[in-house]
Image 1 (tube, rainbow, N blue to C red):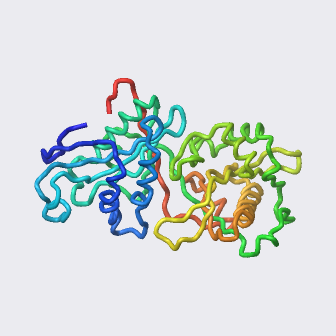
Image 2 (tube, rainbow, N blue to C red):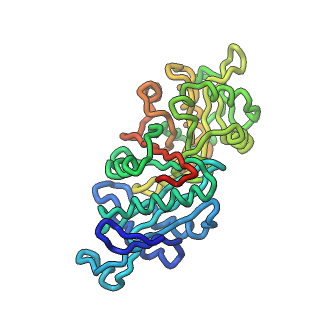
Image 3 (cartoon, helix red, strand yellow):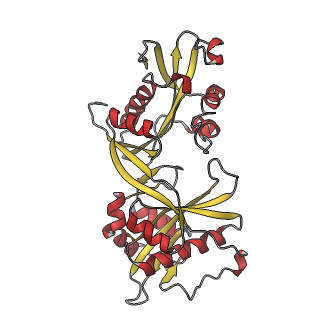
Length: 346
């Protein structure tokens, strides 16, 4: 696609390829100069390009044909510069995800991010999806305002809580804990109909619009379906809390997604849980569930020293977790949505 930016310079959005890696690495070196987080895009860009098929994923770059920029040494070497990058991918038949939108600092404020987002929404429409989503950290007011101006609407808010794994050798962590008031089941719990029924009517579901962390794409969110719960159960990643009386009634559940290394920190291993669901105020359920998550993380890998668990950004769930001693991120994360139409009106 060819257009012009807000300064009148010629702009091209094209399919990314492996030769763009150095340029992407350069423009993502100082993404958030006032934050401790490192930018992951430069490191994952080669994987994105390798996975691009135009049907389920597409990475694009934006170039500007302009006079050399006095503050950009690379622009004096080549007047056509890769100054931005982003990717769109599908998470289900209807859901698309925009991620990794970056514009080189010296080229911000020229409408380039808007051009990239409009292009990716057109790609998502061609992929036959009906909704595009993306996350914005609550401190990123510039991105939040940009998405609203383009036409994205506010979605859910969530926060990571962080129950700590046990500081003990894994062999000494019992799978039974007399202090836990409810029955906890993990890899032997493959009957998920009642777990799905609990989710269908749970207040957690209502607060999150049925959306949790995606189980295939890191840092993406998608709708929880019954087959996702079944897959988690058969792979030993579903944790279910049930009443002892009446027997077997589901009071909460969690799904472990993956292990990860946090951004901008020492390379220590963490365990990610796509959702922890319980009815707010059910103290026995949250105590049992977060205790089970701590045990699960400890038994999974002795190198894991922290977790992140998605819950709604609501004082009811956050205070429930705080009572158990679980830590939490200092800030929430926002989800933004854009409903695609056949007319391509973004």
